[in-house]
Image (cartoon, rainbow, N blue to C red; front, top):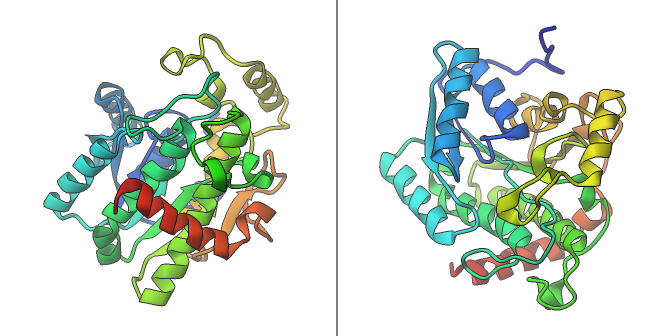
Length: 306
């Protein structure tokens, strides 16, 4: 049965969209639906071989789609800088940026190439460096930036005394921190844009719960088999309690493309773990402190050397 979109994406012909994490799962759905709406889509991916395979799939699903692939490893600030330099040289203004890529709960503490705890480094700092590096192109396009947070960010906090979790590592609490950081960055980016007249809007989405590969076997991250949580989520998805990968992508698409969407808004499924996408009535408590948002921005700039 053909999939029926949860809402109608407006015509995006002539726009240029960048979607991280588009070689799999939610990002692949987001990129495909943006291409279907007429956008030219760039897939920055760690494996260009995998990225080209996905790009070919999008072209097959959407005849005439304009899709390109660039290399990006969010666990390496050098890789982020290389992509920023390339896109800056190419000079194409950006209309949509969807910061969707992420990693979740490696079985043991791991670090990025720059020495940051992996989840904080990839989910937050990599996207922070990418977005700030692309800011001139985002300003030129009057862009909307949508940041993908997680249901895990309903609770938890920023571990200010040990952002890299070098002491008493807890994988889930570190993941919660990284996704709270995503939300705080989204809010501060929008606040600074409004204050500075940048013309960039920044908002948030979360996908609920769906059977993506975040908790699947990932030997490269030290996980040899699917987690028990992924098996449970897959069952709940089949029963219609949790979302599917396709439905879970819809809040980000709504946040990124809906004509009614604005900066500093939060989108997600109506039943938290699944359901149609909607503007949510309130931010979760860990996301509300704008002092924390400003503090995180300043600390993140220091960490990435800006």
